[in-house]
Length: 150
Image (cartoon, rainbow, N blue to C red; front, side, top):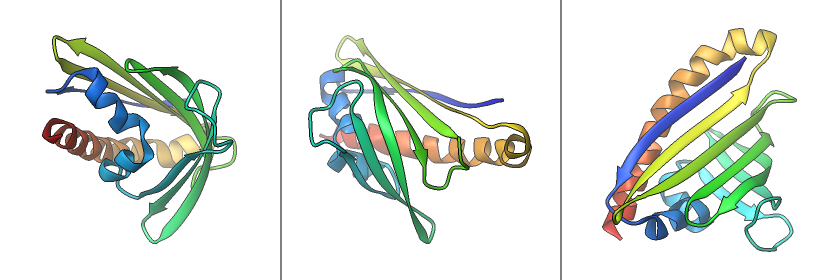
């Protein structure tokens, strides 16, 4: 069963100004609570197919995630998938950011999802959806404030 999180926020800046906030690790750290590192594995350029490593402080522990950029169309679309860390074996998280130009403003549409099967879905699905939704609202509110203040 798929556990999906979806939000849309309008930001008073054009997509060209908003996109760096979702792409650049140093800016991501300012609005993604707990993000300590997000880097390209091969040191290459940001592109679809590029591998990434993330380190996130989750409560008192740090989790390491592996990932891959699955779509990259600057400044309109960034998507990735990641696994490992605190996720049960075989679970991947997918994140999709789409930016729409609204005459100098941006509509940012976020969709995140993961597939949880059997026991994991029954046990963690409802809690994950609740807490991830609260955290996502906080993240996007902070992103909006930072991008508009720039």
